[in-house]
Structure formats: structure tokens, C-alpha cells
Image (cartoon, rainbow, N blue to C red; front, top):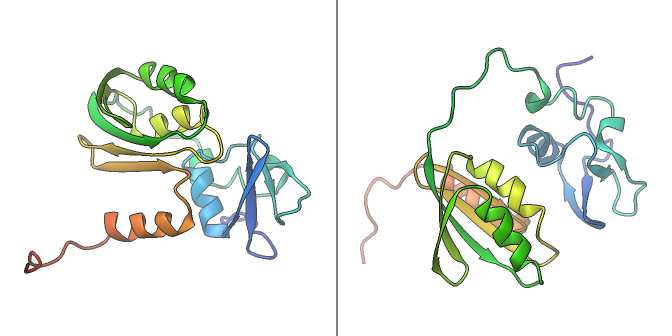
Length: 179
């Protein structure tokens, strides 16, 4: 098996979540989704918007060669508790399921409509993965881990994904802007 996962011949992937197809995503994005465990072996994926859809593990190299799929040499140390802020826009009827999942992750404080503070040992990514399973098309949220300097989000859209990554991972300005 090669060091790089086999990529889509067309360089485009679609991912199905609760029967809804999302995409196109580049090879690099898909490899990242697998590494983040947003796409798993049984996730339905396709190389065209119209399908055919198949479980991700059926695409040679996509799952087994991704960094997240490789065995970890040693167990990770226990994660210290951290403070995570969640801002969500829930437009569907999923609010009760969302709150139940959020409360299962740690101590939750309701700060304002759509804004919560959670004290938890879970990472921003783990929290995102757990609560995203409760939401529907049109719902979205962002998780800010104030203790560990991490960020995770769900269903924000490709343009916002790029803008977040550019700022979050980008250089800090040398001086504060003049007003």
C-alpha cells in the first residue's frame, strides 16, 4: 500500500450526512476529514454528486492510510478539563437532542440564546463530533476551546471554512490596526 491514500480521479468527493450529500471536497479535504474522524469507515461517500454512494472503506487507501487510522504508539495521557464555548444556530427541531448531547459532555452553563460554556475533558473535535450527530440540515455551530487554543465547527459552509482557517492559523498582525 502506498504512503498516500488513493484519491478521486476527478479530485472531488461528496459526503452523505443523514441522507443529504455535501461537496465537492478536494482530496486534501477528504484526507483531513478522515484524520479528524469526521469521515469514518462506514461514512457514505461518492466521487460524483449523483453517486454512486459507497462506504468510505470501499475506496482503496482512503481510510486505512489516513493519519487517524494508523495505530498510536502509546496511549495518550488523560486530557485535563477545559472550558469550551459553543455558539449554535439551530433552525430545526433538534434543540432538545442537541442539549442532551451537550449536557452529556460536561457541565453546561447557558450564557445567552445560542451560547453555552461547557467544562469538559473532551476536545473541541470530540464535542463537535458528538453534538453534530443531533443536528439537521440548516443547523450549524462553532466550538471554541479557550483552554487548549482549539477550534471546531459544523456546517458553516466552504467559504467560512476557508476564512476561519486563514485567520485561526494565520500570522498575527505586527501592530494593532489604527482606528
